[in-house]
Image 1 (cartoon, rainbow, N blue to C red):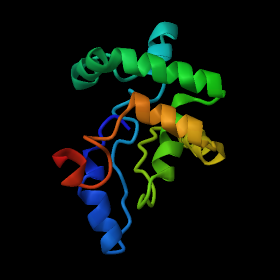
Image 2: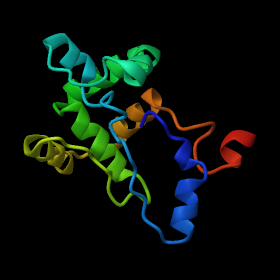
Image 3: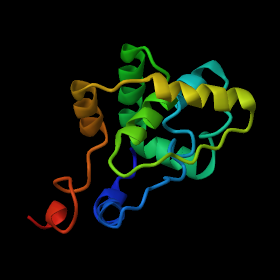
Length: 142
């Protein structure tokens, strides 16, 4: 959700050729997994150093609003992010990186999340598509 440039050319090309897309790092290094909540309760294993910390600093307001939306929905932020990804055209499956069986089991919770149109609209507001949305070059040209 945080990086949507792939929607400009990669997704339309894959769809045109009948190819599935398997996105890497769907939780953006932990930023979409409830990082602010985890930092507050001391359970954050990632996102507090290096590139993740820099990205959090840059997108903190958006991530806070996202975590509030997830709480309002009653779902874990990681589940919402994975459910959103699974709702995208052309996506076959995300590459998740669980370190434990428990983490894998928690990722499977995304399969139980239904994102209705108002929620998808709100997610687009928080994480807008590039330009005008849709494929390029129209998305950024006019």
